[in-house]
Image (tube, rainbow, N blue to C red; front, side, top):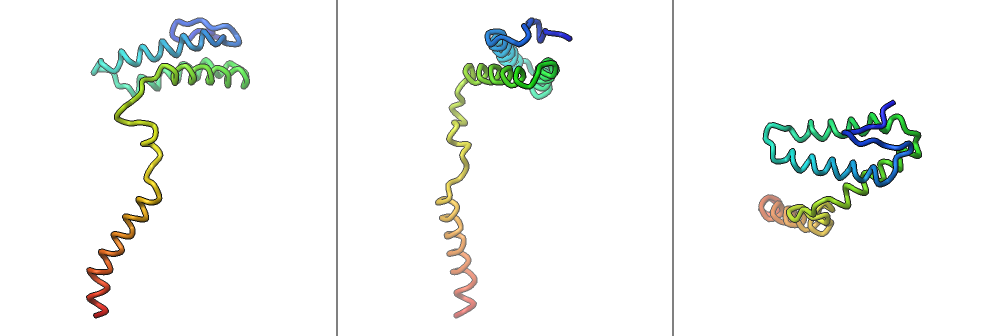
Length: 119
């Protein structure tokens, strides 16, 4: 049973500082990989996730949950804000906009097809 991921040795159960250091290391490696055109980022990230998954399979469910809470929390903490895709943009289209668009389409259909046919 290996307690190592990407050169980081972990206590059992993993300590929060060790998990945070791994998350920071993975973020640094990802930032470096972005600028290398020969690296396919999808495969690269999947390989990182696979190594983390293989390690967490050896942990009991409570330790695994804490590991992922620490890991995800640290990644979220050090994440860059994306000004082109703010969080509120992920909410979707408002109901008002949908009703307005359907109303305009209904008016166009009515005045183009139904009113001339009835007259």
